[in-house]
Length: 233
Image 1 (tube, rainbow, N blue to C red):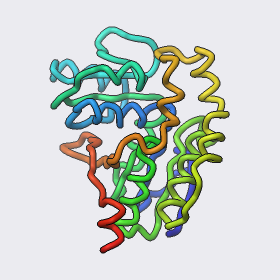
Image 2: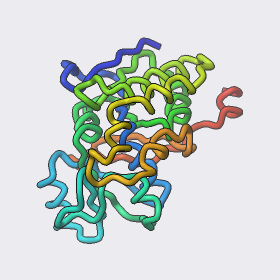
Image 3: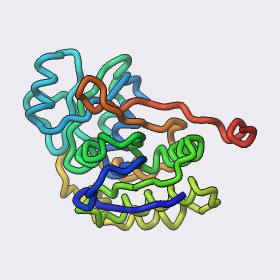
Image 4: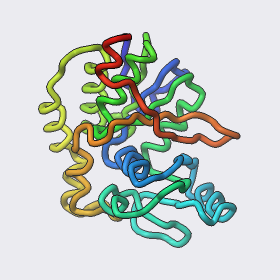
């Protein structure tokens, strides 16, 4: 499998397959939203679009980065979301980096959104789809976020069949600037448990696939082959 690791600004053409990585915290939050019962997640282009969607669909759950704000139901924190019942709900998500990265590759044939919590499932889906070329979009810090790069590199190695040990990649993520800012309370709309939840390897058994649906970029849970089933293919 041919792999590239690019920041959002480095995406000069639409890749055939893309894995958009945002560990802290967009796609950890997305995974928790699905775990809490969300049916789908609409990735909004802007805060204004998120609010407009919420206004048209009052039963949808809108969340954003930063502190609580009028019109939004939640913030981009996995720890704050883990106790929210989202059964059958549509979530609208707008973040600084993760949703921007997914929208930047919305024309790709396959778009996966990932963090450590769905790393192995994401790797297995890439293997199942037999992707020959994959672009990993490192969303944070203009493509320099080490937590996102570490996760992307780990998934790439697992997708290639490399029995990579996650420990070193998780250490890098835990020592990243984003982790420090969350731990020190620099980022608003955070919870003390956010970093630990973002570094929880393979918490969930599903992958997350984004695709255009009626002009909206929609993220959905995707079941993946079990290791036993995969081996028999």
